[in-house]
Image (cartoon, rainbow, N blue to C red; front, side, top):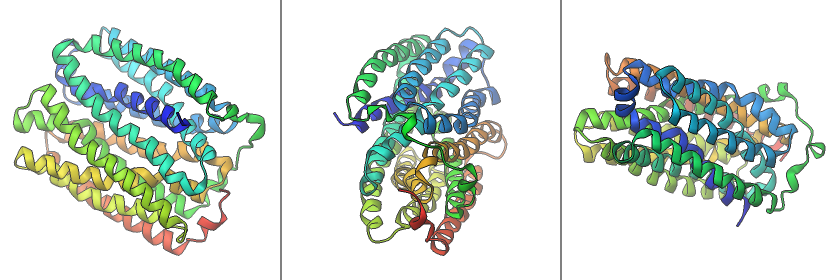
Length: 397
C-alpha cells in the first residue's frame, strides 16, 4: 500500500476524533451542562490550541524524524480522546480538547512535508489532494458517528471506542510509513529554511489570507450546520449529523479529485495554475455557504451544501500544493504549519462568534458578510498570482 494511503487513514481518524463532538452537543449540554457560547468553546479551544501549536509543529517537521512524529501524534491524540470520554465536568472536557489540539498539531505539517518530498512535483496536487480527502471523509464519518453514538451508546462510550481504534492503528501506521521507502527522512539530510523567506513571498501571503477567509466559512459549516438543521427542521442528532455531512463531504471529495487532477495538468504549462485553482475554490464556494444557511427547505439546504462542498474541493486540493510552489523545500513544514495556523485562527474565532451571533443576527446574515470577505480575498489572490507569477519559478521544488 502506498505511503499516501496509510496517511489518508490516519488523517481521516484525526478528523473523526475531533469532529464527532459537534453532533453530540445536545448530549453534552444535558450531561455536563454545556450551553450557548460554552458549546462554541468546545470547538474554539481545540482550534486555538491546535493552530497556535502549528508553527512549532511545522518546524519540528523540518528538523526531526517525520515517521516518529506521525506515529507519536496518533498515539497522543488517541490518549486525549480517551480523556474527553472520561471527563467529569465542562472544564475538564475543555482541557482534554486543548490537549487534543496540541497532539493533533504534530500530524498535519509533518504529513504534508513528508508527502511533498516523497512524491514528484508533477503529482503533488494529486498526492496532497488524495490525503486531504481523508479529512472530509473523517468529517463525514465523525458527524454521523458522533450523533449515532450519542443516541445509541452514550457519548462517553463513543469517545472510548474512537480512542481504542486510534491506538490500534498506530501500529499499522508505523509499519506502513517505515515500509514505504521513506527511510525516516533523516533530519541530518535536511536543513531548515529561512523564516524571513516565507514573508517575502507575496503569493504565499495572499494565499494565506484567502485560506483564512475560506476556513472561517468552512468551519461555521462544519461546526454549526448540524445545530442549524436541528433548530430549523427539527431533526434528531443522528439525522442532523448525517444530513450536515454527507452532502457536503461527498461533493467535496469529488471536488478534491477533480481539482487536484486539473491543477497538476495545468501546472505543466502554466506555473501559477495551483494558485488560480485555489482562488477559484474560495470565490465560488462562499456563496453556496450563505445559501445553505438561508435555505427554506431541507432539500434546498442539501443541494446548496453540496455546491459548497464541490467548489471547496478546488481549494482543499491545492492550498498546500500551491504554497509549496512558492516556498523553498527547507520551509515545507513551517510553511504548511503557518498556513494552517492562519486558517485555524480564523476558524476558531468564527466557531466561537457563531455561537454568540446565531442568537442575535442569525446564521444567514453572518454568512453573507463572510461571503463578501471571501470573494475579496479570492480576487486578491488571483491578482497577486498574476502580478508576481515569477515566484513560482524561483522556489526550490
